[in-house]
Image (cartoon, rainbow over all chains, first blue to last red; front, side, top):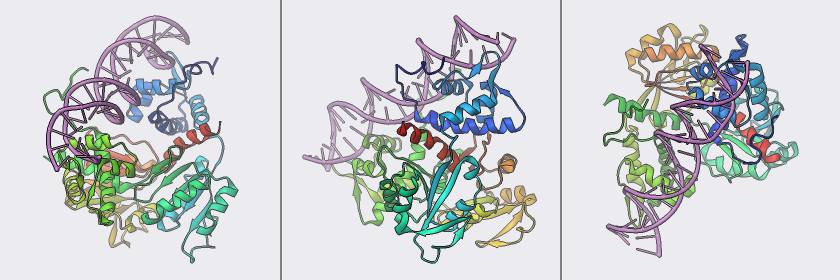
Length: 217
Length: 217
DNA sequence: GTTTGTGAAGTATTTCACAGCC
DNA sequence: GGCTGTGAAATACTTCACAAAC
């Protein structure tokens, strides 16, 4: 009794919804680790600071996962979300730029524990190349295209200086990469079919000051 | 629930607009550094992957900064945006959590070059306390409230383990902090008047896999 | 009693389109 | 010729409200 719901009308799921799903997943996982079995949209909304209606509507794009009068079975909903987001497979990830930040990323266990395994690392600095960091050997930049396409890597993280970011990302894309998390503090252009997310704490700070100043007046 | 607080003449600027301003600023600064003096909304939109109308509309919330037939004087627009975002003063920033990521943050020059000066750093690990990192002495956690309020710090960055993040952030808020950039991979609850931005690459990856999988089918 | 799922209603945001100006 | 600034229109998103289910 699944499949049939959204088949004929072909409504695209809004991207904001997709972006919220991992947040639901994270909070649900925490609840499960606390030994909780069932949660209502209201309880989840309180934890995540979102309205219950929003959560129900978001989930309804994909199916009917709850039970009236009860709420959602946490383990079941986790399973559904992981399937929707394609998180049951292990994803290969490439990392470009092994400076201080790149090393922190390589050593961070949170990627592989969530199924994102960094399988290749690159740096332009000859003194870095050949070093082992976090079990990975650092490769020279001229091998980037070759290794990315040979390994079929579709996800990359860039932690290179701002001036090199665009050209590195261009090369990643032409090697077959579809999704990029970019740490370089610079605006990047990508084709429509490529997903780019910028991780930029300075940009985040620069919008918050507006509100601090406004609150003072 | 009807209670529209904003009905009399004064229209609140949407938060999405405020979030875009720093991006405009960054690209404008790059153009200025390339020696360019004037830019049209179309040119800027091409660089930033946004429609010209959106840029003009965003700027029109704050004034009329352009010239018909010509576009915007870059140096003038930069000045305006910096004033709107309150970026002409130096902002004191506190950092909590001096692990690998915290150290990368402390050593990153990009905060202070943009006017965000890290003036206090805290860690719970006794072996870290008293060390100098990036010109700052690491303080113990029990001094957090005292130093934050004595220094009048309104902005903090948290890079602590997920399990401690909520309690650290609660303490920051009760010490007077208004804006927080949180690197801990966990959902955090804050009052309405506090701005919180999460920096979470794993969450970013978990929504991108949806699109990779969708593209493959 | 409680809570889901969902059309309909209500907001918010983006885009259009053009007068006015260079 | 070009471009901005802005109401109006269009689109996108969120919230409401209630029948159906437990």
